[in-house]
Amino acid sequence: MREDIDWAARRLEAASRVVCLTGAGVSAESGVPTFRDAQTGLWSRFDAEELASPEGFERDPGLVWRWYMWRLDQLKAAAPNPGHFALAQLAGLCERFLLVTQNVDSLHEQAGSGEVLHLHGSLLHFRCNSCAAPHHLTGEQRRAESPPACGLCGDLVRPDVVWFGESLPWDVVEEAADAAQGCDAMLVIGTSGLVYPAAQLPLIAKRAGAAVIDVNPEPGPISSIADLFLQGKSGEILPALAGSVADRRANA
Ligand code: BJW
Ligand code: ZN
Image (cartoon, rainbow, N blue to C red; front, side, top):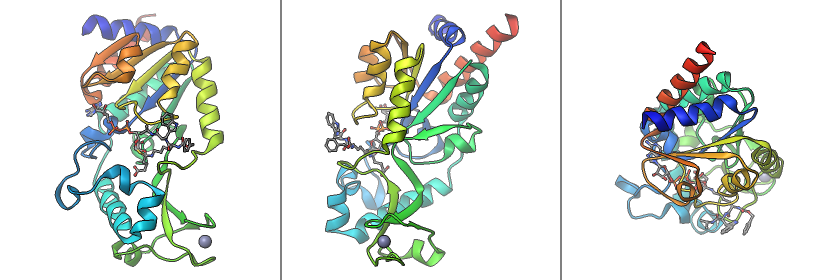
């Protein structure tokens, strides 16, 4: 593992542009369950993929609302872990570093990462399901059994996230894809690599000749195309990686 981390550190240090794609696994050690973890407690009999869809919201807006409010409560109790902090440190050590996340939490920003591209929106923001007007929740609305109505058009308020079958913010996707095309190294952290178009980014980088480095406790579609698979938890591997890059910089 030490040699693999040194190899990755050399690639990051030599790169003039690094892109990092993160998924739910980077927040797992903060106590935020990953998307495809079996749901626990009250939610164990529901399918996350069904809840995170326009069809699920149409079928039962109250159920979807309560799920998101439950997740928001979990998130409010969470803090960034050493993996988030190491990525913020790496941004300062690499020549150009772009962080692209699929996560709807704000733990990267809380850890000090400056520019973060959010592909799937934010669990902390809300908007109208029809006219997209932003909505600030009151405490009472957060505790309610069903979503509030939009003050402008009367339709329901929803979390400002991207559900299955919905378009991602295309300016963000375009910026991420351009960066993937132009980078020398891509770090892929804690994602199952199952959801598109995010899962396309490592393939774009690979085809463009970048070194793809996957960090995950489990092998998956990304590790099978990666130049290096660092098997383990991001909260353990990323601090070692950032430390190795920092040492190389200090001794250069
Ligand atoms: C650790 C760890 C530790 C654990 N350390 N790691 C091309 C081909 C096939 C299908 C499509 C395609 N293009 C589009 C589609 C359809 C669809 C799609 O991809 N479907 C697939 C499931 C097949 N995509 C879409 O619909 C997207 N829209 C779109 O493309 O629009 C145009 C279009 C529309 C219709 C048709 C065609 C095109 C929208 C996708 C939106 C995804 N939204 C969600 C929900 C967000 C809100 C919410 O959170 O509620 O985003 S789904 C969910 O998955 C969430 C995540 O961001 C995303 C990715 O999950 P992630 O982050 O990888 O988490 P997990 O749980 O899957 O994995 C965790 C990983 O962590 C695991 O690998 C663990 O091992 C690891 N781990 N502990 C490091 N300590
Ligand atoms: Zn509205």
